[in-house]
Image (cartoon, rainbow, N blue to C red):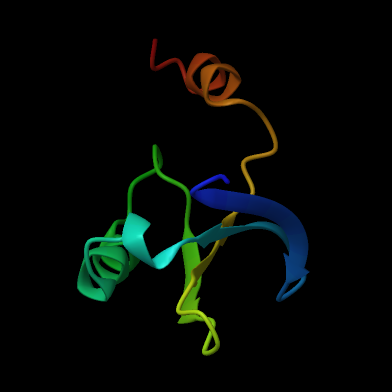
Length: 79
């Protein structure tokens, strides 16, 4: 089975991506929470992180870019 699953949802009035990771895919909660301090126009915004109590999967709620990484890089003139 896959290591993660991404679902699109709605959070605080915005379309978001919810990435659900198996516990073994994450080095530490601190590593993921460090993402919260990244403020860069080249990175998606992190809205929140939580654990599923029953199986310890990690749920990351982040900005939905709405396009592929390649399209985003071209749009922002990064390539």
